[in-house]
Amino acid sequence: MIIKTYGLTKYYGKVRGVEDLDLEVEQGEIFGFLGPNGAGKTTTIRLLLDLIRPTKGHAEIFGLDTRRYSWQIRQRLGNVPGDDFLYEDMTGTELLDLLGRLHTGDHGARRQELAERLEIDLGRKIKGYSTGMKQKVTLIQALMNDPELLILDEPTSGLDPIMQQEVYDILLEEKARGKTVFLSSHILPEVERVCDRVGIVREGHLVDLEALPDLKRKKVRKMEVIFKEEIAPEMLTMDEVEVVSKEGRRVNLTVHGNVDKLIKRLAELEVEDVVFPEATLEDTFMTFYSHESHEVKK
Amino acid sequence: MNLAIFFSNLKSSRGGMIAWGAFGFLFGLLVMYIYPSIGDVSGISEYLENLPEQFKAAFGLTGEGVSLLTPEGFYSLEAFVSVEYLSWWPPVLAIYAIFAAGGIVAREVERGTMDLLLSQPVHRYQVVISKFAVFLTALLVVSIVSLAGLAAGFALIEEKADLLGVSLALLQSFLLVMAVAGYSALFSCLFLDPRKTQMAAGVLTAGLYILNFMAPSLGSFDWAKKISLFYYYQPLPIVQNAALNWAGVGIYLGVTVVCFIASLVVFQRRDIVA
Image 1: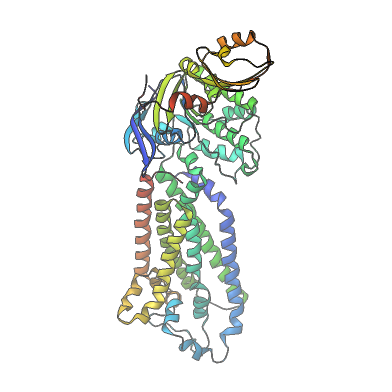
Image 2 (image 1 turned 90 degrees about the vertical axis):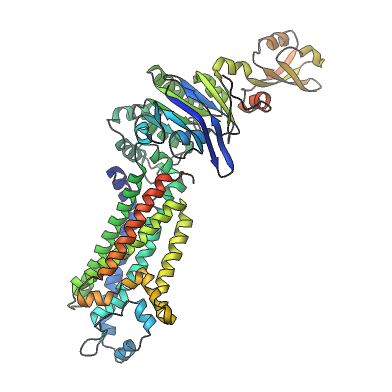
């Protein structure tokens, strides 16, 4: 087990960060840590990194207590913080030199390779970087020392879709090399692309812990269909589909899980247009987790 | 100490170091430049002798066997440099200490860069020690450059002055400012907020400074002046006797060490939350 938490709890005064969090992340997996903004994802990561101390419970990484052996643990992990706060008066090279010197080993070749893949000029001052470029620098610093564990807080934030894909490729390569990735995100498609297993956190509690196919089954998507002629809503009534509203020829639906039956039914009707955006985590949460107990399901 | 953090921070603080060093150098040069026009002004002896005790305390002109005047009745160079330069130097450098040492961890926490630094394999005490060492290095450089400015000023006006006494006064002021930096660093680790740190350290420093020259007016509370760090910094006796105030040296080092160790303990235990 690479990460294991035991009833990990953090309160900021009376404000709850996370509560009774029991997590297990195995070696060689990409674990998605999902939840809406403010759910407690960053608090969990900060506890794992020993930046903040638990109110109750404890955590282990590599089998070592995160408080007692924090320094030893940080020698073996790479971290992308949730915010892209960097030393603005340095160049990308200067920052990576500084952070590289805090580790042992030579990271020059790996750093160069990552800079080329992420297409960033490290010679420029960081204060002139865009949000996406800063994110690339934080990704390079996390990866360049060849860590056994990557703890990534929203690692693709600010990146364009092409660069996002490049990051996913890098993460999958790391996994293939036996590395472990703890990926915090609020973007469901991102997690679907790369994660083996997910933990879902909401209002400081772990509300679900499951393999990705189970999450996909739970996924909730909205669909808007404009028919050529007005239809009776009952024509779309079936398992896993709910008619939310109907205005003339325009029908709004929610689709739970598999979309196959609905597509087949639509093929029997005359359809003018379909709007079917990516599933959002918020929609899934609204449907599945808004009233569930805070019991962890394994 | 971590040398990578030390040199990186030293590089980023070079602007402040150069600015304060240039200020110290030019201030010394300017003060010496105007000495010839003031040193033998008629009536200066009566003026200096009749200065209020609070003023003398504030400017460090009190002490056993010190005199503001030369045997010929002129304003002595030692007294002049003590009043016009050395007495001002610690309060001015204290401002530098409050901002620089007060920001050693609070500024990085506020900017969010501390998260990045502390997620690397580096101990928290290494961060505090390295950053405090950068401040002390900068303070040392500024003090040496300031001494060079005074020496250049002496040469400019072709006056012979006891550079050893002036150096010792600057050393005593260095230690005083180091003590101010010590409690500023402690506030920095306690509050993790630059504004709160500057407010607390600024109010404490101003309070101690005012206490030093107001205490003689407080009658039976005259002893209170000994609480002030500034009480132990009397530049004129140090310059004229070419001897440090050892009680002051002990107190400054004691305050610095106690506050610095407290800083390490507090920072080790704190949640890093902006």
